[in-house]
Length: 368
Ligand SMILES: *Cc1c(COP(=O)(O)O)cnc(C)c1O
Picture (cartoon, rainbow, N blue to C red):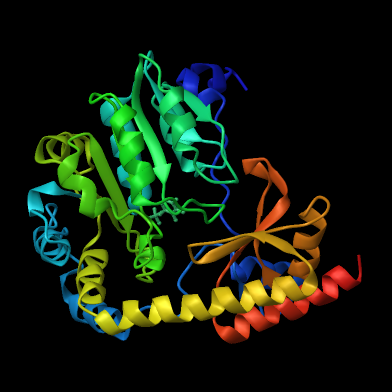
């Protein structure tokens, strides 16, 4: 190389590692010549997309030569109705990952810092460091967020705190009362990002609902996504909800057409499909039970989950279990990058997929 290009990059980016996604089904089929592969690695909705989404996408085909509506006017109106908010509170993103990046770009720069939890979503340190800001990791409690520790980790130069509730990759969540106590300790000039990618699975119990408390805190940003319970991971669409001034800032750095036209109509279609989201929750509740019972039978311990995945713990490094499951045609997610090298994260699938996983796991553990 004529030049060390790494040395030319932004300082924060020099030490970054790219996000590692779950292994694609086709890749495993190619590598091992397997026909039947079950992927339980990326917390995707096993139901497939809503039929209403497929119809909406087909109908939108004729307009593909046009740029999408850059303001996402209709979807934002639908979301405002759905959540009883105002449409000037929404920022749409190419997945909620996109809006997490926008938040970092608006509020972080060299000389500033952001706080997230041990075992917190790996995208947070990527977003923080890409802006040249300092990442502060607060210790976890029982694999979940220790909100007291997070509040204590805030320093003078801290501008953002990232919290996932429920958390990925551990599936833990906290109740509204804990959050109220936390917010009382957070300075008003520190933005709190509440990432609710899995909230649809935990709603109904006493898990905090960020939308319900949003009016109380000007420094709160809630992010949500259509990738998980709504079944649109492949289309890439998510959003942030915040006060109108913060929303204006986020929209200043948003790429002009960051959400494509098919994602816009698909999101509108699934939002109106109340039966789909009800079934998604139902299938997940049943599947989570099924996998927990199966793991109990196998004597495998796991972190109790409030989301659409469960994180299992093995007595030793889980990489061998992961690889042997691949050989059986099952893709799960190793999470060594989170410092959890004895754990595997298993997404909840359809009944038949969960059964396939449990059978494969029985075989693999028997052969170790
Ligand atoms: C999956 C996930 C997201 C959503 O990512 P998208 O970009 O919307 O697909 C956000 N936060 C967490 C914690 C997640 O696990």
